Length: 430
Image (tube, rainbow, N blue to C red):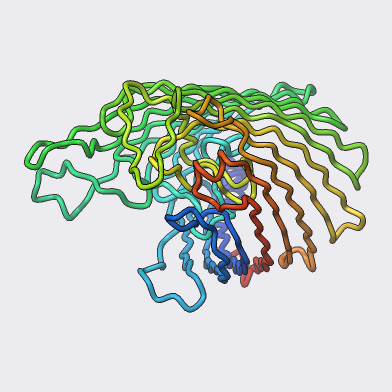
């Protein structure tokens, strides 16, 4: 009897811990007004018109956890003020996660993928909808090691009468995705290293009517390295793509980046870096009125997949958000520098400069694309409320005008004002 009593005393705390439930409800309100002359949208005749609009995004989330089990639901509505086009209500997150002993876990459902500096997989929260993926993630995290294996398979329910093989695109355009990410932090050194492998299947749209659609598979492999001592940091990455692009054309592309940062005090931070993304060799420029059809034996333009491109390639989003006139790309070289200043804790300012050029020679044009200067101010009113404003100016070249059909005088402006409120309505335990 005494032994049974001692066993109960030992087990009861464990049972009590297993019964603890945590539940919270939160929201994310984001509203951004923009004034543009140039940027993503331009007219067919090559002129950039003034445009003004207000974007908004509302997310309502609920999180639950109990010992080894957790779950998350996030409903999302994103639209332009006054617009009635389309259905903008969606589910941004809907997943359950089981945490097993010794660092293993499994996460199933609609979830975000965000790795390293978000160059290949990122949440892309600057955009109104962001990125999320339907799939299963298996992982292990312990003692500085992190391993994530993700798999997804997408299908059209509307095509089930055709054998369940077709896929026209949903929240992501791929039909299948398998990725493996490994990261290790070397203790007491500030050094981190990651390896990433991706195998993505895209349904080939270059098939005749009545033919069974085929899936073109393309692969990506690369590494991300970082070193972050106390007052400075270094980052570098390299990724290579191969396989078949959509349409069955062989793919051979790559990108590389390097970045250095210095933080001499809590008030100042400096950065400089360089990005290179490969492009099509001897890139042709279609003349006025031409549709620019070119046969490519090999696709050499790098595809940044699901990265947070706004973070890297200029705030005006000319590159890897909007496409070039014929759908292919001459690649990009991005030489940049920036400084951040925090005079007082709630207020920060950032200034950045970019020099853009194509990665490959362009027929009958120079490679330089132009200079972009970016200014941003952020005021954190309280931890859950921030107000920010920004202004960007780009002085483009003739090559920029021809490639992007941006504007005749190549002077492009963009200003914005954004309010972000992230309250937690309820959080409780029982």
